[in-house]
Image 1 (cartoon, rainbow, N blue to C red):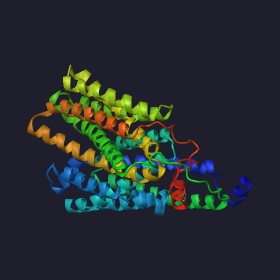
Image 2 (cartoon, helix red, strand yellow):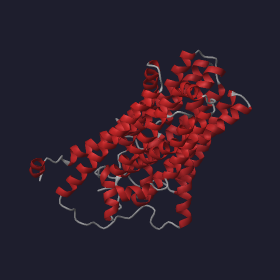
Image 3 (cartoon, one colour):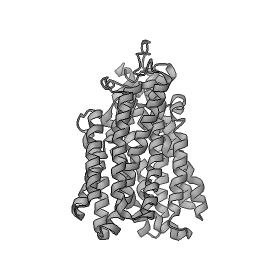
Image 4 (cartoon, one colour):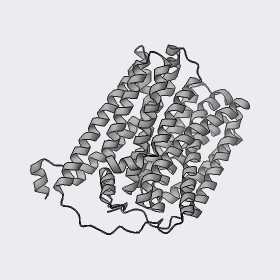
Length: 430
């Protein structure tokens, strides 16, 4: 069979999966890139459009609405289109949106296409998280989110170079090129997957294995879904809220210089990215990652509230970033274990939507609290969030305890997820 594949010019299953994994990581770098670009580009963008500084929140709000709405249908879209086709569509939508940014004569066009960017991000975020979680590889999940952090770190450099050349617009032309390239590569991956599947003898039908949620009442299932979405909402609110407001806190409350503030912000996001990549290099049970990460996160938030000194407080932000790093990927990996692959298909996308809503909504609420009081409220606000996160995790674990071993490591590649669903085999492994 291997010789036949070589004669036909087909990739082996292992090389095809490696290609899919690398493309997934590259896609998450591209997904993170604009999150690092927009904040850095905004002072120049608003000067171009004559817009007030607060309109940045309006762009984020519109894109978040698009992201949250599309996650409701990501599961069915994976079943209908398959993962590669879904991600190719996401790349095209993103390219259209960022072309609108680059060519916008006024803020009205930026606001008009922002919803496309949200839809694209929701499809890519929800689609890849779902697909990777169902392959049962938590290391790849950590690498995936580490790749996102790499993108957010590169973004400010890209837009800074663009601004030095005379305009912020070339940064978005770079994004258009990357998104179109990603879409083309996912279409190529789809063709390779189909050719490989056609050359592979069909597997013998196997009876579907029992799902962990079989026998649950509708009330219990609903409770688990709501509890899970609540955990993602609060977690992302804590991660994004602390990250977005750290610079203002360090600059205007701790009175650090602009350079020191930049290093402090890099310390938070850098620790988050580094720990995610580190977790991908070793085997750590997802339950332990959630438990220890959330616990250390509470302690770090308490130190930020205490403010024993500028250096210690900045270090606590870095510790918080490192502690939270593995929680999101671990929670994603645990969803199929709690519910089974069939139900996880939809629920993971809903969780990603809840995370998007939490990141935007909680950060905005913290901003309102700061506006009503002072930046000193950031410490108690994130401490309360960290405590709520642990409480929500305890509720989720009580409703759906994780007592089964992890998903089989011999799981299929990303493209096989949608194909398996269409063929009626809903198991997350084999």
